[in-house]
Image (tube, rainbow, N blue to C red):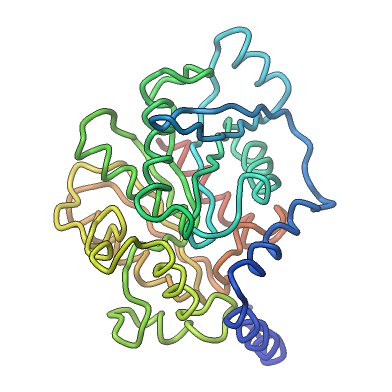
Length: 314
């Protein structure tokens, strides 16, 4: 069902309000999710992984108490999703994504490891990325508490987290320290231009009235970058990579009314053209950020149908 006129007017008003919001206000609004009355209580464990001298917090979610017992005490590892949260590199946290990751563990029957990477602008590119890479290297090289075999690990992220997941896979291929088999990118931010000069129609079509605006994305990227030259780096903008061969089997989910829609799909097509196995699924009538909605939401259910099918095929 398409978005009706009344809902479009509400979305337009909310989009206007979001555009004028200061960073600290945006963070306080995001932090309200910590009070989530619908939080799912599942077995979870907080750990830390070192990135040089910095301790990167991670939270482990188990799909069941039995899974926790088998994973920690019996040495029988469940398959694992290594997850990087969204938030434009500047907001959100493991805590605000608590319900998302808990329902992900239950819905996929995977252990989920959520990463508390450092945020911009206090920590600019590439610091957040190096936090994510350090966690991935530890998990994939069997130095993590769960000892999950690398073939049972999938890298995953939404929005800015999708950017980080794609960048970690590129960095892993280039450095040769480990190599993920699978990546799931949910409406990933993989481009570098959200002005009228963008090559993607979705930036102009969906960049003003559907909650996330192109102006917001541009502001987030400016806060994330250390300088303008960062935008040419494939680790900052994966679409800048000329050689996309030798990358993991990939599932990309996009949202119809999202300024990031076309760049995510273009990245998938380029991965496919480079010889990788890729599935691209556009969620009809969906907005950017839908994945953080409740599990009963139809768009979320549809997403988990795609995710579970992808994981089972792999």
